[in-house]
Length: 186
Image 1 (cartoon, rainbow, N blue to C red):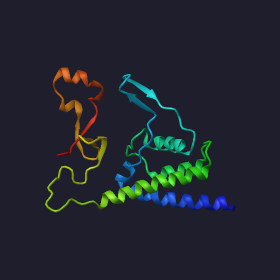
Image 2: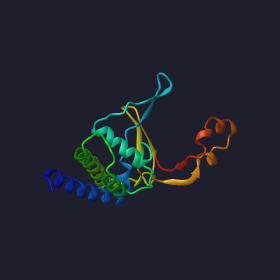
Image 3: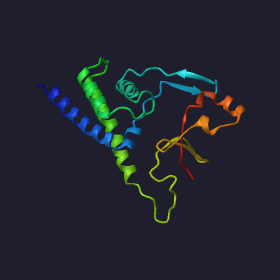
Image 4: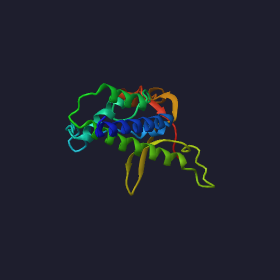
């Protein structure tokens, strides 16, 4: 076996170990966010298609979007399953497979480390914030004036359409009526 083949095998084994660690901790998988393919430009009030980045990071973003089923993680697949699939099917990417493996290793290691850090966090003594305890919050805005986030791991078992009963409001948000609601916050 060539030196490159040996390195690829080591990278694959490490990817599997990290993916199994992430599979065991849902918060780790939630940290695997893909690069968006479109953004909304508030200035022109339209959706803009982002160009595809043909280097390693672009291919990794494409693989991650395939795994997630979009930009954000939807808990349907195992990370280990995705790593095995990518490794065994040898999908054609213009980037070097070893470069892709090392890039994936960096991405999974970062998510696993962040997951470990978040798991170790505890509430300070005297803090009584049960609404946010063990809550995963996707931050959507953070500046010196405010922080805005969306709770993504505490479903209420209710859809937005069940909570909003006023007909004018229901008409305005009709595309979102089947969206599940989540609880949390102070």
